[in-house]
Each structure stands twice: as C-alpha cells, then as structure tokens.
Image (cartoon, rainbow over all chains, first blue to last red; front, side, top):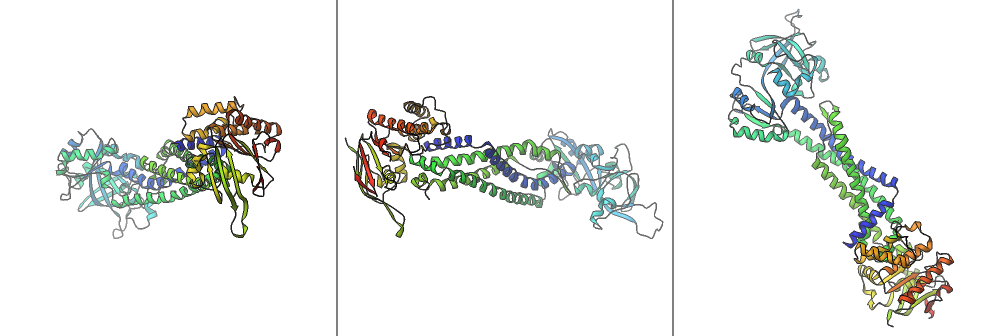
Length: 415
Length: 225
C-alpha cells in the first residue's frame, strides 16, 4: 500500500512534468493502436454485418414464417396474419407467394419463329405492394421505372440479374433477357398458362435474393399460379427491435402457430457458413490489429526504457534512501497505464462518437454489401483490456530491468 | 556514549581475476553515538568507498560491520533498504533530489515510505524545510532552487525520518564557498543542538574543523584517526 502510494505520486508527477508534446504523441500512438484494433476487425466483420443488415432490411425481416417441412405452404395463412397483427412488437409484415416461371421478352419483334426465343427462368414473388414496401422499402430499390401501384394490374418489377444489360459482368452464367426496360412487354409462362405483363420497374439491391426475383401483385400471382386458398409461401415480419425477435417467436409458439408453419428468428435463419465467415473475419481482423498492438507495446517499452535509463541515477538514489523497488516500478507502470487508458478512451470516443455513426451514414460500398464499422461494446471492452495489459507489461519490464540493478552502481552511474 | 558503527577488518575489492583493485585494505573503525566524524584523504584514497560500506549502500568483500547493533552484512536487499529507511539519512554530493517532485514532496518521500499518512508527512516536511531555512519554498521544484537551497532540501530529507546517523558524501563539493559554509554550519548545528551522529566525507580541511574526529585515509588504509 505504501509502495502504491509513493509509486502513484512519482508516476503522476512524472506525467505532469513531462513535455506536453511527448505525452501528446504517445497518447496519439495509443489512440491509433486502439483504433487499429477496432477498425481492422470492425470493417472486416462490418462487411458481413452490412450484408446481413441488408438481407434483414430488404429481404428477410426479423422473423421468418415459412411452410412446415411436411407441408408445401403456410397453413391457415389468413388466420395467421390476423394473429400476427395483434402482437405489439410487430411493426410490419409482408405475405409472399413464390413460384417459378419462364419469362419471355422481345417476342413481338421476333420474325423467325423457328429461331431462339429470348427467355429466362425466373422466380416470381406475389406481394401486396403496400405491405411489402412498408416491410422492406422495396420501392426504394427501383433503379429504373416505377414501383407497383396496388390499383393497377398487369405490371411487373424485374430484378436486375434477369436483365442482360445489368448482369453482363457475370458473362453467360446468368439466365437473362435482353433489351428490356420499363414500358416493355414480357410474358410469364407457367406450364400451359401464359400472361403478359408490362415492365413497371427494375429493382437492384445489394441483396441477391432481390436481384433474382420478379415481383407481381399477389392477386395476379394467385390467379396465375392457381393458388386460390390464400396459403402463402413466406411471411416476413419486422419487430420494433431485433432483441424482441426471440420473444415474438416464443409467443407465437406459445399460441400454437407452429402447428401451421415453421417460425424462426432472422438470427436462427442465418446460414452457418455466414456465421463462420463472420467469426473468421473477426479472428483475422484481431490478428492484423494485434500487429499494431505489438508495435505499440514496443513503443511503450522504448519510451519507458529510455525514461528509466535516463533516470537511473535517481532510481538508485530513491532506493538508497529507502524507497522500495516496487514503488519505483509502480511509478513507471502508472505512466504506461495512463497512456493506455487515455489512448483507449480517446479511441473509444472517436469510434462511437464519430466513426460508427459516420460509417452508418456513409457505408463503404462493397459489391455485395454496404460495409459498416461493426464495433460491439463487449468486443471493444476486451480489446481495451488487451491493450491495457500489453501496455502494462511493456511499461513494467524496462522499469524492472533498470530498478533491479545494483543501487550503488545506479547512484554512481557505473555499469 | 555507545558505538553506533563498529567496522572490523573491512576490505573492498573491485573487478575479477587479474584486474582486481583493492580499494579498502582492512579498515577498523568505530563511530560513537553523537559523534561528528569527517573522512578525509586524497582522491582515490577510498573515502567514498568506506562511506558506502558504513552506510549500507555497498557490501564489503570481507570484514564485519555492525550498524546500530545490526549485523548489516546478513541483510538481504529488501531488509537493507528498510534498514536504510529506518536508521540512516543521506546527503549526496549533487543533492540527488527527484526532479519531478517539489521540495516538500522530496522531503515527504521517506516519511510516506515509512507509513506516515499524507498530512503528517506534509507537516513534518514543512517543519524540516523551515528548520533548514527554506520557508515558502515548499512547492518549488529542484530546478527552481539554487544549489545551496537544493542541498538544504537534501539535508531536510535526510533529517525528516529522525535517522540515527546521517551520511554526507562531499555535501559542499558542488556549492560555492558561502553555500558550502552554510551547509556545514547546518550540520554542525544539528550535531551540537540535537546530538545528531554525522559521518561526512570531505576533502576541504576547513569544513572538517567543526568535526569531533577526522579519519584520514591513504591508499585504502587509515593513517591517522
């Protein structure tokens, strides 16, 4: 306790009397190190997190209801929808009907009937345009033309991956039609049934699930696909906060809704490989960030070492007048702790006060994701603990090396 | 009077193999309580080396050494540090103050290490600084004080823990004659009024005049007591 008191006094006074520029520079290095620890893994994880957020926002919602494994469709869909509407946590939901069709374009201009038809195999989703837009803001993804009007019939939205002009980067990999834009006619063939639609708009998203879909109003879908019982393929639900997802699912299970459908949270629906990639990126980011940590620890080591070496004689005198070794070591450890805590505090302030909000507002444009800076408080805390411990060790070792030298040799400056 | 220091056959050698330097060659010395002793001699005679042995800052290569009835040669490093803290006070040639601490905090250091509380240490430090004529200089850093003032802070620090013996290693060497005389007067005053035991290394005969006894060293041996 006595050593701690004297060590802290010596440490605080050394910091107070040190050059402001030097102290500022050391803290700056520590801040950058801490940011490096957070940012590298944060951006790598944020890449996946951004993709995950996009899927949650634009496609799957927070809770997903689909057909039970032993059924083709969600049973008693109208009754289910009425029940869902009563949950206070549910802020929006959309009922979807899905099917496969062949989409043909440019058939009105085709002169040679024996030539190759311009077709693509497409998935068709029947939606209530207002409910879907409320749920996923689908209208905001229209990059050409307009969104579906619920009062109109005979219109279709096409995902960009079915259009040659948009999908040319993929070469021949995708099944596309060419020269199709808003106002053009396309035909959907489902077995023997065929219906013409006017292209209302083109939708493009970072989420492939949207790009690989065509959307038509659900009334037309049910007629086209002879789905007159209103039993849907998927219901996606938005909750007030993602933390409520598990509670909503539990409440639905308690109400017996699982008799009619399979109900899972967005998190439970995530494919395992995505979680594995996220964890791998996190490890990778931490590894890359830890290189910065090593550099910072060496910096602190050198700073404390030079400081202690230049004060070797004073250290000897302190020991000579009866000050314990631990007190002197604590003085240097206290300085290292000060640099680590101040640097990390500034880094945390910058991360949560500026970087995270900035990247939320201005995501990094990756091809498949709007990359954000993923910095969860728990991870940040453990990175702080890591930086703190490494810095303390880097401060302690040189102090220990100098303090353990012979007292009289230190006083006299002898080797 | 009783003996505070009893040194018998003290040898101190430095180096290894063929490069051994024999600095102290069988010193016998006794210092009584309340004595003011000067150690004198030419450069290289071994004055400072002898003082380092007697003040438990160094360990003799050979010999017996009792300080305040403690066989200091049996103490480990931690025990020796505590012994110096509790029993001895030091005044070094170049003041040896901690540059980041104020005059007051420098004097408080050994007191805090002994376990005195903050306020108690502060009061004692202020009293000691007053005694050496440094009223109003409590918050000054060593760099803001003259050489003489810094040496007085060092004396105040040495006195603060009420040590049995004060060791002064050429305390006037870095001072002008006026400041040097003031420091010697201060030590003399302490010896006469408080009965403080003082062992001082000096090569200035006039500064040794107030001492009760002078130990002359030549080539590592006492030539005259």
